[in-house]
Image 1: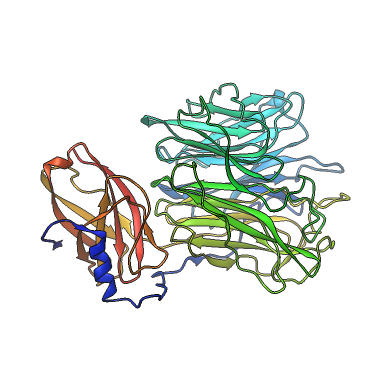
Image 2: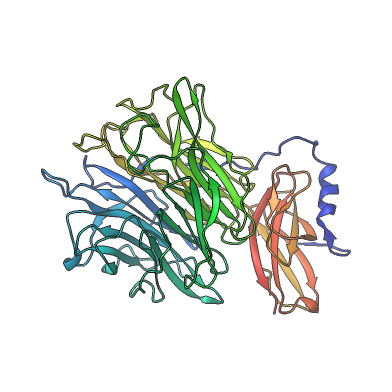
Length: 546
């Protein structure tokens, strides 16, 4: 156990220490890259029938538990019958049980799709949902309690014949940290449930648009990203739990736009609606958005890339969008991104990519791969990983249509240090749903113990490199502050100070013991640790000293 002496220091002190051990202008590598597990098929009972439009969720407290969904044609015989398939894993994605989950009997139809998932970080509850596309249909959801392998019976969240593309999210109600509100955003507005998905209110309109994606911030802020059918990558924001929304906020202006049914900018003949992906840091509240857009025309072929923007002020203003994907020469296309952020501040993304085959827009046999990419420095740099063992042919979509269909989006779930990208590949000649288990190492910072002011407290970080020095920083508000000597790395603290440092023992545990003054009582403090030698940050702990 290391005891520090002297006054609390500013972050500049860490910069001085860094100057002695790093070369200016040299990028600092992360201690451990992500460990990407093998492809595991999820829809194990799906046979060779079509599947697409995946979604996935897990929970920090129980990352072994995962749910995954997709549109599924296994019930078809002659015509097309679409259901929502649901898969459950309780062993970190190593094995899966899958089944069809339907709405209540009176609301069933021949087309039940547009699947969605969400999780409650407070209770560990998981939900799945979809839309029954019929006059007697609408939005339906089902709940899985923590530790269970099965779902409770589905309920109708909204009976309507006009619902289209919904997504879900859950989080606290503003001002009530012991609450859970579950949201669904779709083309008719936002609905929510305050009883864990049993009953739902009437929709609050969001205006015209499509691909409404809800996200809940750490203080219960509700954000909904969408495409306005034109050049706008848009956001609606509510700070009162969805009761009222601010005027639309423009995240970005597209360079190019096309219709929901258009796929002419890509190899293959399937549609590629230009939907957006949004994520919010569950601790700092930083917002991230990724969308795909035409950058230029190369040799007569449109080059589509992934554009990234972030907001540090709850979505009021956004950084200038920039391309974040790698590519080849001539360039391929990147599209259908899905974005998530874990409690350590790492950004995870899944997308499709055509860089490995030189091909023209509109060819029938479009060849694609699934990619996972991660940023541990707020989006400044990214590490990409090809997931598919070889490129797959989009013509093998499992459907007998004049136009191919590979769905409109992908999914990715997070649980603790684990990421679970969930996508469809036809590498085996038919569309199957796959998940990888990806583990990322990070410092794990525990809440201060005993968490009381006017007493000695222990600040403990685990998963550090043995013998390395770990610094403990704190601030009175979340934010983003660059770390001197670690290019591209920011602590998610506003005006941070250094509380002290400790050397990690042989088990990778660094413990700082400090007296917390009486003035800290009743104050909310944000605390984060950083391993200086590798520029590895920890999660952010939000502590209220008693």
